[in-house]
Image (cartoon, rainbow, N blue to C red):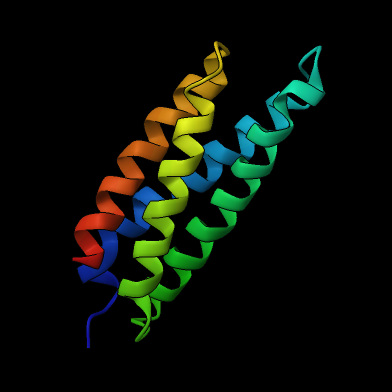
Length: 110
């Protein structure tokens, strides 16, 4: 059974990504045109949820960790694509962190 130590790098990437996605969502709610940021906010929150779930299942050495990592990578890529459309610094940073997390999750799911 694979354990926390095996997954540590990916767990750390997921937890960082979740935190940055939460920050991005929160910062987006402070923008002048919040409606324009609605998709970004929604994807940030969804991505954070996937990242937390993946980190938790990996830390447990769960039997579905690889499958969840593959889904998490998909979600991170979708979030990165949306955040990358915006000029805001918090969105740019979120896109970068999501891309890095997707890469970690893809390698874990392989």
